[in-house]
Image 1 (cartoon, helix red, strand yellow):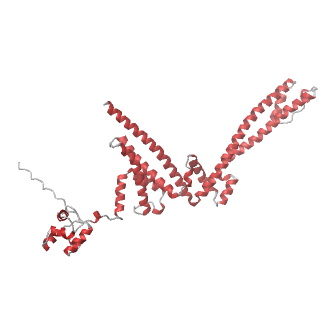
Image 2 (tube, helix red, strand yellow; image 1 turned 180 degrees about the horizontal axis):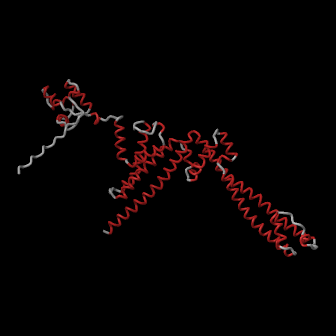
Image 3 (cartoon, rainbow, N blue to C red; image 1 turned 135 degrees about the horizontal axis):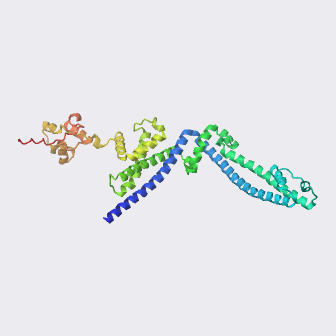
Length: 393
């Protein structure tokens, strides 16, 4: 009992790990291929130019962010230096007989300070006067540098907050590619988000490859939904290999269904089969993976309309025995004349097996009769024992 419980727990844990890995990988690929496909389909032939402009804008913004970070670091350093310079100026002025209310207005207005002797109303030596002027100049210089640096930081924030098409370099690129700013602003943010999520290389793929990748990932996702339901409901106990192979079966099934859709072999309601909507492709992929068995029968039916097999054209010899009796010949004679085995001829006569198309033509020729008088495509009715009569009470 313990070993059985351990086995069930291990199987459940393994299934959960497998499902987590499947969902993680498939959702990542499906979201990326769907997002990039949708963006490129909406942009059409302009997609490559807009992606290029997004790359240029991204470089510009990254450079602006780097300059902004450097300026903010410098601002913090200058603020610390200004705080030290103001403290030194205050200490020096107070030590030389100035009141704080005499010093603070000079600092607040960025104004040139009067001489120390004028403020203190007493004679001051030249060295002290020079020190006072030097410290005041240091405070003023830092204040002006901080003001200019803060203006530059504000400009950088404005550039980063502005629309993609606001930068002169982007406007020049858009003009060269004959694009309007509305297209750029609508597509740039989506493209940047997809690139940040790691889908940048998908933009270099042709649209046909993107659509195939979308169909494959959605087919596997549909199969994963199927096995998830089976595992959660516990309605079916299959071999572990089934749960491993089923997602790949969904991928292949979705690919075949996509090919049939493109070939026009399946009836669709999504418009021209040569220009399928990507969301319809996604839905058909999920349905193919989720209903792989039904999709297989649909594929087989579509293929049967193109490739006619011998079994499908085989018919039943419902009047062959009567024709042989009418001509006074036997099954052995027919087998000898056709080069068939007596058992095979008996199967035709007893209608336990159909007659292949080639054999139909040979029999009709040998008997000098039309094929339509000897063979039918309707299989023989199954015979059943008549119901037993109830015994009288």
